[in-house]
Length: 114
Image 1 (cartoon, rainbow, N blue to C red):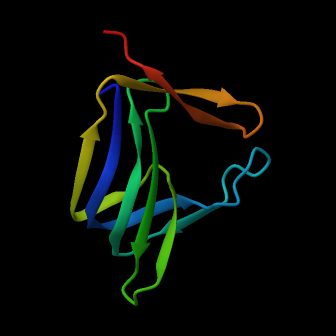
Image 2: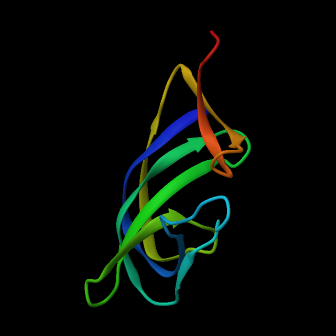
């Protein structure tokens, strides 16, 4: 896939790591770690073929219904299932390039060559 979008996901996790919204170039890893059963209530993002290949945000809920969300980091473990629905975005290519201003790889969208 040269460019794809995650449009929905249902499932559950036993472990998750989410980077919080206050991350910036000086504090890139303000992270919440979970070691418990969680329901995936939302998963959205982009997938590309090169470099850092995805940018995903997820919301999860714990056993008491408390919700947490943020940027998905490695280390998430599926409990029962993660039914992820992707859309292949024809005729465009997603790439990522490092942005000095933000300190993160940012999305570049290119028209695919025919």
